[in-house]
Image (cartoon, rainbow, N blue to C red; front, side, top):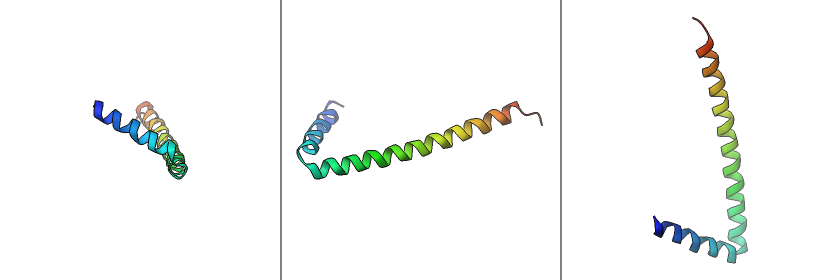
Length: 58
């Protein structure tokens, strides 16, 4: 695992030195954040449905 983190440091330094890569990383982070927000909403909806069904009597 140590090699993996070292690789991230190298890539991070490369990104910091190249404005075009910084912009791509920013866009990627923005997209990733939007996807996680959508996933969180889906999980919340699922939790509500499970709670409702677990409290319902059939």
